Amino acid sequence: MTTQREITAGGDVAAGNIDKRQTFIIEAPKTQLGGLVEQLREQIGKDPEAAEFVESLLSWINPKKTALTRDLAEKLNACGKGHLICDALEAKERFAKQLKKTTFNPAIQEIYAYILGEIYANFNHRIKPRIAAAVEPGSIEGAIADLANTITSQIANAPTSLGVGMTEITGMLYYLTGNCHIDWDYNASIPSSD
Image 1 (tube, rainbow, N blue to C red):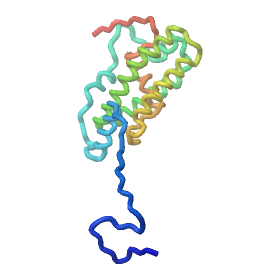
Image 2: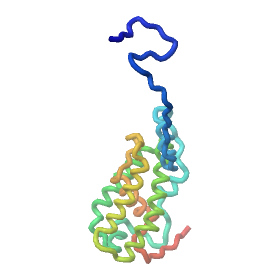
Image 3: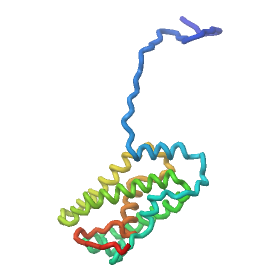
Image 4: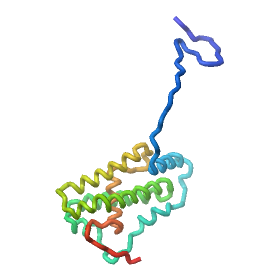
């Protein structure tokens, strides 16, 4: 039996063999969203009173001025998705409240701005064309769930204070719809009045 009582060593001490083979850790390349999540991790606890808004988020928060203004319910009804109205209004309101809570947290706001941009681009290029094609029932909802799942997988290691899951992603989609950044009518050409 080997004991390690009252020993002094200038190096490693073990009761058996010491294995000093090299170990290499290879990390997956960081995505832009992953980098923002890391910034958020660093910011937590440093400056909760930060008062600077993220510039790009403001463009999503402010309603887009259009020649034809319709609310979220009208947009969903127009494309045959009226059954989503109650859930959409609730999700939109939930995200609006979350957004308000994070007003003074620039790192979270930057992540929100990035996610809102991703939702906007993906909806217009992947989901909206499916609405025009009158795909089978549930297909649009499935595409929205796929989009939300893709984004949440990018932020899986984010702190819980980020408060973004699949429900919040869909809330962001409906928030963008309510602010006239997204329209569900594929053929609707709404000129900007800017």
